[in-house]
Length: 138
Image (cartoon, rainbow, N blue to C red; front, side):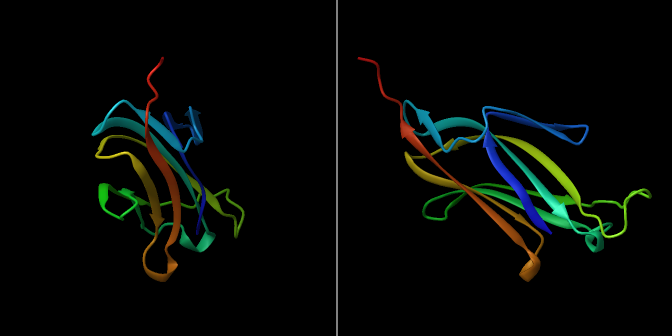
């Protein structure tokens, strides 16, 4: 298993096994003041190996600050089946998109952590981003 992709966006959804993304690939958010209510979308795709199908795979997504203080925690579970027409040994991509409304307490660095699996078999992806003060015109 591996995390094929993980990306931050303004909007993301998976429909018909396709990822639809708007305003994706950023690493900086602007806010007038803190705490800042922000909305962000997290899209990820986990590539599951042939022998990992039909087995529950835990998925953990957290948002934390640079001091590793957890702000948001989301837990989910993947369970990828094996379609009858899938060639033996083929991998499959399981995609997910989640939109989160969160209050970021201060300006500075944050990260979204995506962890699929448990123990030594777990795979991880870190998406760093920062919240900066919006420049006032003039």
